[in-house]
Amino acid sequence: MNITQAQSLTWTNDRVRLRDLKPWAHNPRQISKRAAKRLLDSWRDYGQVQLIVVGPDNEVYDGHQRLNALKAVHGDSYEVEVRRASRALTDEERRRLVILLHAGTTGQWNWDELAGWDSQQLIEWGLDEDTLAQWRLDTAGLWSLLGSERAMHPHPEYGVPDTESSDLIYRTIKVHFETEEAVQSFAELVGQKITDKTKFIWFPYRENQSPSLCEAADES
Image (cartoon, rainbow, N blue to C red; front, side, top):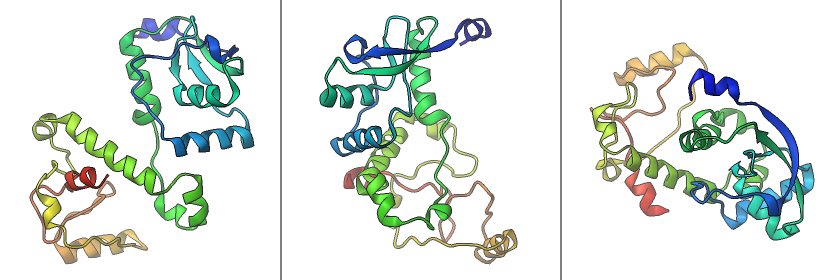
């Protein structure tokens, strides 16, 4: 999207019946039955927190899962709030938007913070084994999508995927550090560089330290 296009695009709120919304035939997002139930439960408990994003002719840009779940329960005459674009998006803009909204601009979970929450509630709300399995599939799918690009452009911190490493993993543990000094003392002890971007290491050190995702895909 160039500057001229961005400046010409504005958004307004509106209300539309489900029957008038036009799903995208090439929508890359999907939802499980369990997640769809949670979506409906959250709608019942909190109301419509997120707006469905549409174009001038009610073509859906974001919100297909809400559309499908609500139509199944409430029927196509049910009315929802939408966020409407002032002009139609190009195919490239549409594809870019869906990736940005669901991956490119999202944050990550702070697992240390979540450790203090009620684990049973977290599972009930959606951080469960089904979510973990989907994350594994998504991660494996992403590595597959990247293909040869990952070998041509290895990550500066994590190296490139090692498709043979799954057979070499004997045990994985999580280590907590109280201070940065403790982190660096540990790094010196194991003889490896650890930065604020490091998510994992191999011990002993391996040339390419990315964990294999093949096993995760097989398990799921």
